[in-house]
Length: 509
Image (tube, rainbow, N blue to C red; front, top):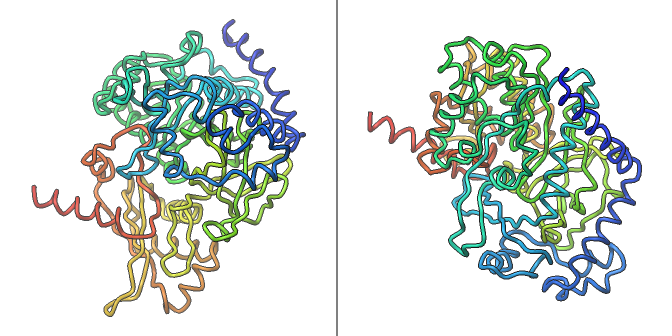
C-alpha cells in the first residue's frame, strides 16, 4: 500500500464518528439544521417576507412558509441570475447548476452557495470514500486515479460574474487543488461541451492510466467503457484497468444497467456504490455492501420533510418530519437547504427501508409514473420487474421507457415499453410475461387492473435498435450531463417522439 493511500485512509476514517452521531441522534441534528438555516437567512428578502426571526418551531415554519416548486421560486432565481444578492440566501451566489432533470426543454437553474459546496457536496464526496474505506479496510483505491466525467459550463448570458453548468462541472471547477490529485482526466477534457468529442478524448487519455474508481451516471459511463474497448482492442475493462475496484453511481436507477457492467467488468471483486445526489443537494449514500438502500445524510445543511403520496397535490396535504415517517408509505421529498431553497419540492419520491438509522430508496418521481387507469405504477416497480425479466431470460437491457396505450374502440388499454437491449431475449413474449407477472406481484393496483384482461392487457414490448436512445437524445441536443429519458410517463409524449424519430430515420435511409 502506498504512503498516500495509507494517509488518506486514516483521515477519511475520522468522519465516520460524525456519521455515527447523526445516525444515533437524527431528530437533534435535523432540529439544529433548521434553526441554523432560519437564523442564517433571517435578513434575506425571503427571510424577512416570512418572518424567520420570529419562527420558534418546525410547526411555525411549516404553517408560515408555503411549499414551493421550481415554477414558484423561479422569479427569485431569475433575479439572482442577474446579479441580485440577499434574495434567498445571504452569502454571495455566483454559481448555478443547470438541470433539466428529464428531457424537458425547460431548464432549471439551481443556486449553489459556498456553504452548499463545502458543507454538502464536497462533504458528501468525502463521506462516500469514508464509508467505502470503513467497509473495505484493505482497499487500494487511492493508489490510482478516480475517473470523473464532468459536464460543461460557460459564462452565463445573464451576468458576466454569474456562471452556470451541469452540477458535475460546477463541482469540478470549484474543487480545491488537493482534490485533483486523485482525479482524471484533465479539467480541460472533463469540461468539454461536445460530449462525443469528450468521450473520445477521455478514452484516449485515460486507457494507459491506473484508474481504480469511476464515478457518474451509468449510461454515459457505459458508453465511455465501450469506447475504451474499441480503442484498445481488449475484451473487457479488467484488461484495460486491472486495478479498477469501484463504481460510484447515481442519477438513475442502476438496476437496468447492472448486467451490462458485470459483463464488461467481469471482476467478482468489483464493487458498486449508489449515491443520491442532485443539483439541489446530496441526500443519500449506500453505507452497507450487502444492501443497496441508502443512508439519509442528515448533517449537510438540508432539512427534510415528506408528503405521503396519497395526499400529494391535494388540498390539505401535510408534510411530516423524519420523526413521523414509516416504512410502508411512498413519500414526496421536500427540502430546505443552505443554498436558499425553502420547502422545495424536488420532484422525487422515496420509501424508507429503515427508521433506525434512516435509510431510503428512491421510488420514482412525482411526475414520473403511469396512472392512466388507476394502476399507480412507479419506477421502483418497473425497474425491479425489468431486472427480473432480464435475469430470467439471460438478456441485458440498455435503456427503456414506458407509457400507456389508451383504451379505444379497437383495443384494450395496455402499457407500452420501448426497450433497447444490449442482449435480446430469445423469446420476447416470455420476457413480457415475466415483466407482467412481477408487476402484478409488486403492485396490487396493477394486478387488479390486469385481472382477466378486463382493463389492461399484457404489456406491449417494442424492441428498438442499439443506439436509439443515444441518437434520439443527440437529435434534441440533450447529450451528456444530467439529461435522461423518463422511465415512465403518464402520457405518450416521449414514446411517440422516439417512435416518430425511428420512422424518420428509416425514411432517410
